[in-house]
Image 1 (cartoon, helix red, strand yellow):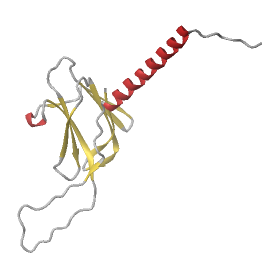
Image 2 (cartoon, rainbow, N blue to C red):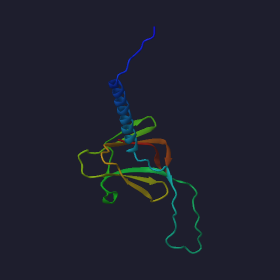
Image 3 (cartoon, helix red, strand yellow):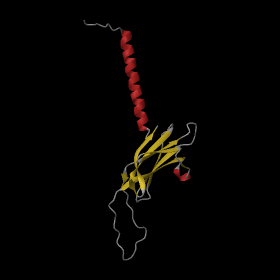
Image 4 (cartoon, rainbow, N blue to C red):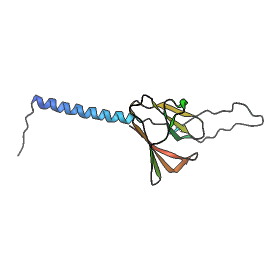
Amino acid sequence: MAMHFRRSNGDRHSLMRRILIVAGFASLVAGEAAATPQCPSEVEVAQQLTVSLPDWTVLRDPVPHRLNRLAFFDGPPEEQASLTPDISRKVKDRTVSTWRFGAASDRRIWITCGYAGTSVWLVRELQPGTRRCSVTYYSRVRFAGMPSIEKLDCE
C-alpha cells in the first residue's frame, strides 16, 4: 500500500530551517578544525657561516629539517612565558600532552614549532577562544633526540 504525504508551505520552511541548521553545524565543525594550527612537517633553511674559515670548505647537509619541538607561550614568545602541559598520559608507544588555556584570560596564547638541526622556530598566535591543545608524541621515531610529533589538536 502506497502512502502519500501532503506538504504544506510550513513543511517546506521547516525543511529549509533544518538544512540551514545542519549547514551551520557543519561550518562550526569546520571552523573548529581550522582552529588547529598545523606546523609544517619540515622546513628548508639557508644556513651559512658568519665568518669564513681559512683552509675549510662549507658542505651542506641534505637531511631535511623536520619538526621536532612544540611549545606554547602565555603572550609573545619573546617574553619567555613558556607553558608546561597540564597533563601527560602514556598509551603504549605514545604520549599525549594537553595544555589548557584560561578562557577568561586577556593574554594571548602562542605556539612555536621547532625543527631538528636548525635554530629556526616558526611562531604563531593561536586563534582567540582556543581552550586547549593536545600533542601526541610517538616515542619509537625520534628527530634529534626528540620523539616525533604525530598529531596536534586544538579546540
